[in-house]
Image (cartoon, rainbow, N blue to C red; front, side, top):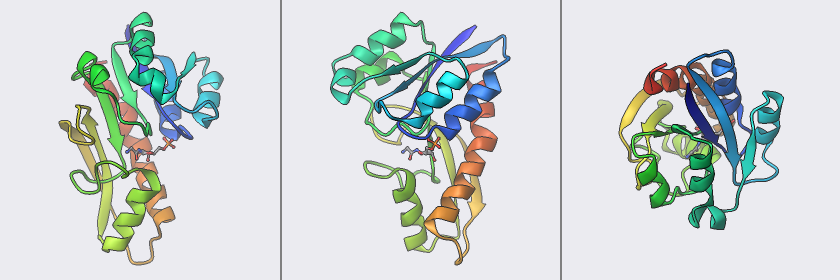
Length: 187
Ligand code: GAR
């Protein structure tokens, strides 16, 4: 059984789809949902699935407490699903090629520090792009620069707002992320 942990900072709609996807698997399980926000809705979603939760501050993560927890739980793979803190180097090294992130744009466009969630969709709208999409990639020590595993795109029209762009991107994420994780971890 592969043991996966999800790190998320917010609502966790992706985390929910992933938990649903692996709920009855006998090859992989979501063994932990961890968040840097004690109020994050993702924690409630985890409880609904009976998945253990863990919260930590940025300081604690940087000091090694999150890695300690992941190792204590024998976590094989770490999934970032809307996790908004920069991952410290000791963690990317410990899970090198075993940590995957989803980014709500077609990297290398709209990546890097400060480019997350609604900021990405507003930038796509401002630039007048005719398409956007999702990127699933491995995590290395540089923001949004790890090896790209999968991308999918969706058209953007003049009528779209950052909110409707976000809806389209979320739909793509929900459709692809759980399956791509399964392929990546080999289950
Ligand atoms: C997702 O769209 C994800 O791609 C994005 O945060 C959202 C979380 O939504 N991640 C980033 O922007 C990372 N740079 P969710 O909490 O509903 O899954």
